[in-house]
Image (cartoon, rainbow, N blue to C red; front, side, top):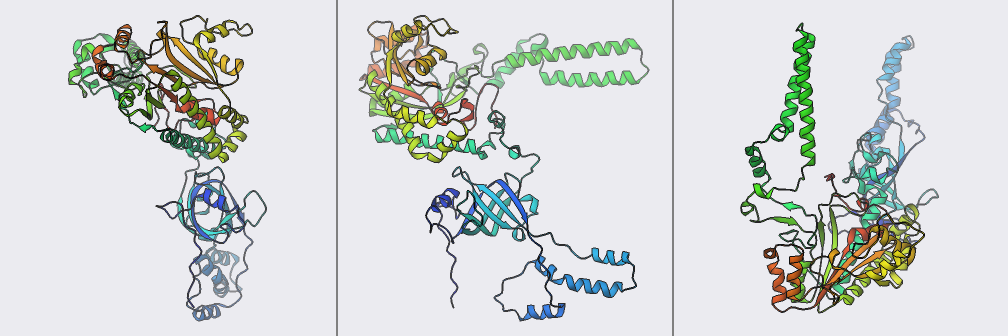
Length: 624
């Protein structure tokens, strides 16, 4: 009779035979589902339990009979384990002890001989909840201790990686699980040093998890945030591709300042050369000494002081050594203060020949990709970009870090109203996408983080947005009498976070689009309005978050743009290529930027952007 192959489910992962936990749990909704099929499942232990089995009485046949039975067994019989063999031979060992010890032998001898009998560990069953990151829920895995290839205690700790093959069955006991895996074979166990593992503690606060960016994705919260972030990423490309935009990769390294007044990270390979030139200038005291040199001197002088204390040297020599050590410590403090105060990205232009730098001129990490996108919009129509943007801003804020991702779009033959409409449609599309495609994660977010987040997204996906001018916003804020703002409001200055929060959260209680800002508070490239005081720029302000989208109609007139570059005191040489777009076939065009990390913050109900970015880069922090 031919042997039948086990009913093994096919994996949705093209390059792996592993089946996702999500696939198993979703497929088990149907009564027939996956029950009875053999699968390979992998994941990390979220929780565990060990249940001891009742001891099995030893078999009664004598050793010769047992041996004869084994010889007579058919060749197709399943192999027995070492533990089972030892257990079957225990009566034989006890007979030998009785013969050797005899009835007259001392109890001590018998006890010593008894101790020579190997005692197998008591059998038990392991119940593990494992999660592979594909969904919020975990799969219950049942393992017999006899098949575990590592000591029992090493498979139970939280964080242990387990890859196992087994049969999916209906759970033996009533509970939350609708299906469980009865393991037949352990394929891999990745053990954990439990006393050192950061996630051994339950419910570690999010701010503590920031110190372990390489480990925190294993938590349920960060895993949900990451899946939502991935969905928003996909939705971004889906929206623009469906609306006729072409994806263009703009440079991360640039020689221009797209904003005209932003803090920039300088890119250079000449820091070593700068240090050499500073040293050759000849500076006094702490400026000419490295911290390492001072610390080495302190170590030597401390050793000298200890020697003098132990010897019979005179007090004057000891006092002089102590005074010398004190001065060295003071010098170390000065040097350390000096080094901390030095901006790490700054290179003194008077000490460096930038012609010899890697790019032959001063270069920076880009703050915005919009002016580069204009080049392709003026040739291809509608284009977009999606990537990291950088600001060397040291401010500490829950909604700003040094590296943040931005989705940017530029559209030829459009004006301010077109950019505002496109930005609103894109934002609503993202809100709807999350509600339609991340239901399980949103249920978890609503339960653990913010009960109102789903309702808020639904409202923003379906409601109309208020549109007001900057002048109207100022008039509304000036009439507020029940709230005192920290910053005094006057026309011509940027609206602060508290001003914007009042408009979106308290006054309108929905997203607000504010347009026609004073020209002094917006970038040089924004189109100047007819009043010559304001420019065609806008901001979309969202409740609880603040400004999520900024946009503008860009200046297409050569003379006015040239004048604006001079007003911002920018180097005209750096923007000649940008002026060429006005010299050769100029066209009206507009665009916008969406703060992608802030959008994730909005969708997850969290309050600090550092908790929704995989690897945060902020002032004083660049882990991993």
